[in-house]
Picture 1 (cartoon, rainbow, N blue to C red):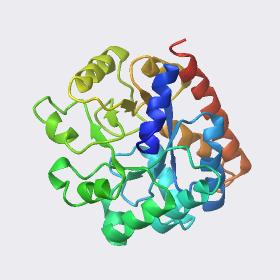
Picture 2 (tube, rainbow, N blue to C red):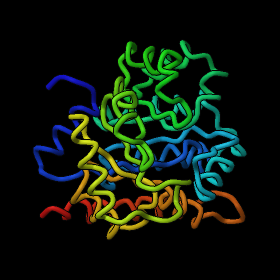
Picture 3 (spheres, helix red, strand yellow):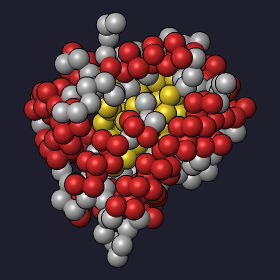
Length: 275
């Protein structure tokens, strides 16, 4: 089967007639060593796609839980180079699970676009989600990333109208990430009826799989989305699970165990949603 790891994973999910679970965690949270263990353990706990947050000092689209995870990672010494190396570590033992880097453009700009793309591809990154680069700026990083072989995963929101959608989707690949609420991550959740209508509208504009995220905290909510979309994205809940295992602000084995146990539970509900 040809295509990227993301293409192959969604084709496999379609063959199984089920939605996938995309698990978001922040690179370096609660510290680089435990973070590497967590990311490596997610596929075995049921994650079909891994989204790795690139820590940033001003994550404007993220709620307090993910903001705190980013601050923990930065305090522990995590960098963008370290994030790329984290992917490289995972790839030594896992050449199948799609890995997407998600975050903001500033750290990449500081790293250098060409150097970042070269290192990301070499490490085994499959796709990018940049929340603060609109389609009007595609020449800045989107087009070079696509040329380098990476999937450029575009965000669509409840305020993305049908007139703008073609521009938003023009260079998208891999999948479309539908942000189910307006506002920041990890806050309220949208209704299934609203999400179903939005996913139907997206599918009229693209053949790409549609993943839905923001505001999904537990297996019951994830299962509801799994009956509608091609994948469910869960992030704040995993970051909170890591935080719940902290001891005086430091990561422990419980941080990892909490997150992986939660992943197993949500994955179970996602997998049985269409049964």
